[in-house]
Length: 385
Ligand SMILES: Cc1ncc(COP(=O)(O)O)c(C=O)c1O
Image (cartoon, rainbow, N blue to C red; front, side, top):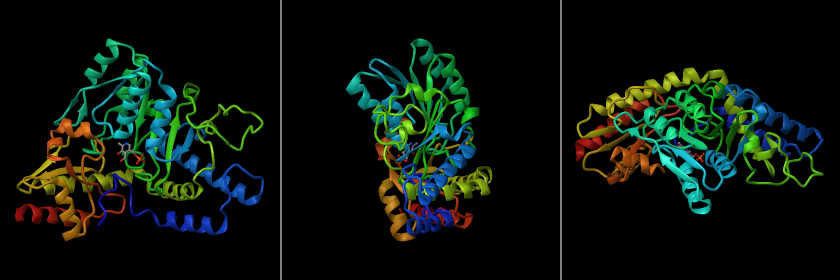
């Protein structure tokens, strides 16, 4: 039983594998590089994938979406392309290392500064009042926030926080790794300037796919980190300044995008709203079931606002990695344990001293019976201690 969908989703909708297999056997031509029929067929798939992503994520124009390697790549493209020496960034302790490490590296390399907004550890929520204080205290170039923590699953009030950032002249980069495809998301409505997401998590595409969506016109603010062939304006030595070519140098991952296109078609058909309802039922079931087991501690203890399908816990007296190993070896349940690349979240929750938490993350194909089996397994482990 696979309960590690927050890392990457599995299994994928059946058409994902079938269309990738079919494309690899029958086409294989690159995108945007030739006038022949197979290349045009590849281009049509890429364009359709962009359109479906725009529809799913509320991006006003599909050309404002660039394909990347993963969510980390998308975040790096913005952070490295936008920030200059002396720039001030406000972020949160709920961020993944894919935000924290580039910020730390840029601090070392070019002297950017970054500060953290306070969060309530009991609810896993950002404190909007403190964000306002930080933005009033000194100008910030950028606010970088995760839409949902990959440790607690708690969804942040991004629209309100973005309005605040914009009022004080800061741009907003949203890390939607844990929400794209999992939670209804409309970039227009949230108002963010940059949205980074993985293609291989809630969007149900294969590993090696990611996207960066940029609000119209904001691409002019970002230096391209990678320059090279785009198949367009080849007579010029300058990197094209237009979307999406500005951020798509070199051949695209066509097998991955073929899979992502099939996955997003499936998502549009199923609807994110329906899948989110199913996921929140499973999350509630897991949370309630685990909370009844003596010796199990949940983070956060009480779920109040919206959240995605992530349930983090510890069993008193047992190392979280050992618990995950027992779940795998004795019960056939695959899940993640440790710090989940989010060390400051664990410091906030007080779970850093325990080496992190066990994390169960159901996906689109997890059933209520699976959740019941997982609860029974944790109960058996706790009882055996
Ligand atoms: C909140 C968050 N941001 C970023 C990432 C990085 O995603 P990717 O593996 O696609 O680079 C993850 C992955 O777990 C994540 O949970």
